[in-house]
Image 1 (tube, rainbow over the protein chains, first blue to last red):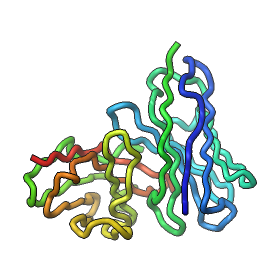
Image 2 (image 1 turned 90 degrees about the horizontal axis):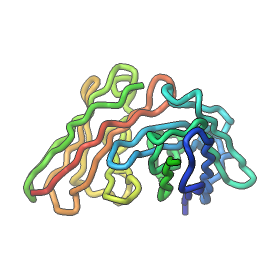
Image 3 (image 1 turned 135 degrees about the vertical axis):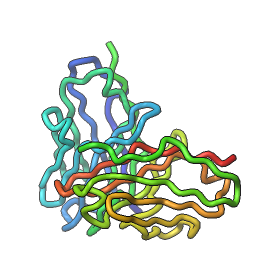
Image 4 (image 1 turned 60 degrees about the horizontal axis):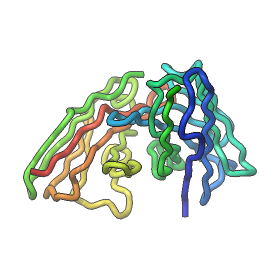
Length: 120
Length: 110
């Protein structure tokens, strides 16, 4: 079955770089049409789409955060990594990874999320 | 990319029907039939309820339905039940090949 799980630091300091890893199973990013996104949700606020990487290594980023984000994949490890530079307290959020449905345009499987707090 | 606009809250009594709107632009909601809806209970990950405007994934109750007209999509919950109380988000694929979410709607069962 398809599962995704996020991992990374629970606490980062302002100005630091955040690195999050999404480890998945039940599918391969080598398969045509497979795509994985990162999405975040500040406490009590709405979901915000951040970035997506496709099976062919094409990458897409949120316009507002593009300069701070880098998404990459390691297909041998079934992992997708997101880095976000220059972290600020407003970046405190639960970060989710989610699979974009194959040949579709919706998120069919989600990780449980990981809470990242930005504080000195 | 601006967030899609949803009402902050919608409420209804058990058994009633409610609808949640999701307004975007010609670059997202109006561009394709790629609107999806997610249900989120407190402390949980979102769950897919509707995709491609009006399709239900396997296992989702037939009480949930979706539609779209122009730049506005809608989610309707009929026969409202206590377990439907949750936050609901719409999402759309965009002409830039990115995704955008709605502002979220809190559904309260009275």
